[in-house]
Each structure stands twice: as C-alpha cells, then as structure tokens.
Length: 124
Image 1 (cartoon, rainbow, N blue to C red):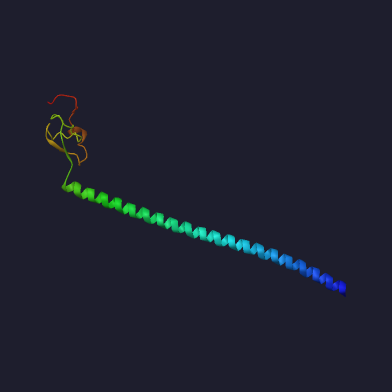
Image 2 (cartoon, rainbow, N blue to C red):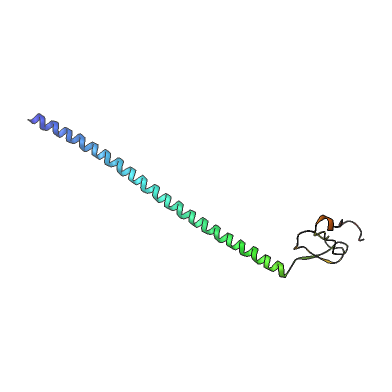
C-alpha cells in the first residue's frame, strides 16, 4: 500500500507541475493579448487624431480657396501690358493695348485672340 501511495504522490506532483506550466503559458498568452490590444487601441487613437488633423487642414484649405475665389471676383489681379516698360501681358489678350492693365485672374485668351508680344520687342 505504501508503494501505491508513493506512486499516487508522484503522479500528483507531475500533474501539479504540468498544471503550473499550462497556467504559466496561459498567463503569458493573456499578457501578450492585452499588450496587443493596448497597442491596437493606441494605434487607432493615433489614426483618429491624424485623420482629424487632416480634416482640419482640408477645411482650412477649402476656406482659403473659397476666400481667394470670393476676393478674386471683387479684387482681381491686374498687371500692365507690354510696351510700357513693365511686365508683358500674361493673358496674351488682344483686347488690351500696350500700357493698359490686363486682368490676369481670367484664363488666357484663345490662340485666335492672342497677339505675339515679346518683352524684348519695341512697342508697336
């Protein structure tokens, strides 16, 4: 009977060791899962912050563009045309004579309406 009790005690000891190993592995896996979840949460939080900042920047740019368009309609950019010693007419618009102001806020005139002006040529 003592041999049987000793055998059962050895089995119990081995089982206890196995249970401790299983619990240790389970604890390590749980800790790894918790850390991964925390890192994922931080990554999502960082991404939300970045997207929010990008949205703010986009709204600011849209406001700037909208303001410039509104101001452009009321306060257009003008330059002097070629022939007066100032900048050549960037619009190439034939409506303007040398020395007049050209509206540079509009797209350039079609090729049929442009005149050939060189900043190096003498006024016509």
